[in-house]
Length: 131
Image (tube, helix red, strand yellow):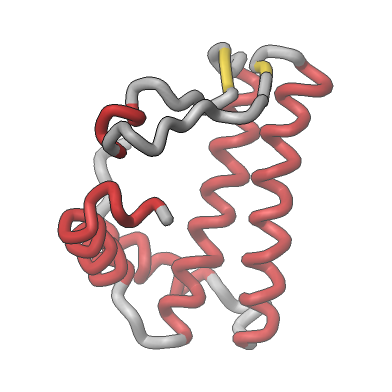
């Protein structure tokens, strides 16, 4: 399958969202899909075991710059997702993206504009965006 443009994806979502067109339905489906993303990754850790989470307090020296800390701070996540867990998580992320895009459609916002605006904001704020 070739690459799909954001505009084409947004049009496709607009055509396919029939049953849950109310903004309230879309908001609740977005929240539900976010929970399913969280659950898919949690099950990869707790049920499958293909990935691990090992969390502890992050060491942070206020005398160092944010850039210096970047390479020393940990994600607490290790291991590659197995093929099954990757497929499940990818599907759940796709559903989440579908409902976020549906929300954009309801609000008459272009998904490409959201990404462009966020990219500009990140570029402007840089690491200061983290707080």
